[in-house]
Image 1 (cartoon, rainbow, N blue to C red):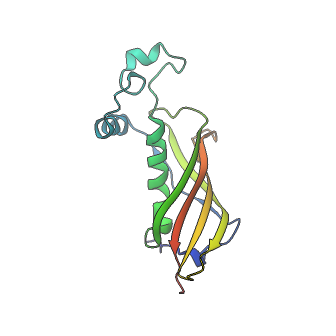
Image 2: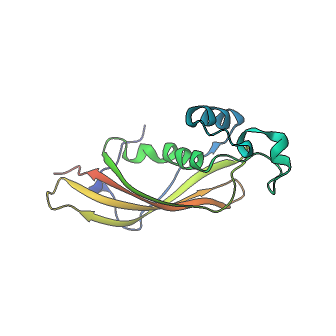
Length: 147
């Protein structure tokens, strides 16, 4: 079991690599059902064959959600808020792709109350071929371990 990290446990430049996860057809079907995003590019194999991708691709937002799941254990007990997200979609994610996340602590700022800090991660979602498929900056508000 991994102990959650607090703001004061992090340092600038610190790097974390997540476990991997394979994207399944069930992931796309369930995500489409939950979000009501039934775009044919995600749900219709015959339609997708006619696109530049030649097969169905995962919803871009599904990649963001999976990235969050792969990294949430780091701050599970300390996160107080997601403050901002700036995200780029570099390449499609396909059914059967196996992704992981690499993240680096880019910015840190302790708040004046001494009990919290703002932390920005630079994150990359990487597929089984080593290609960056998504990347961005995520800024969170974290509690301090030692107040």
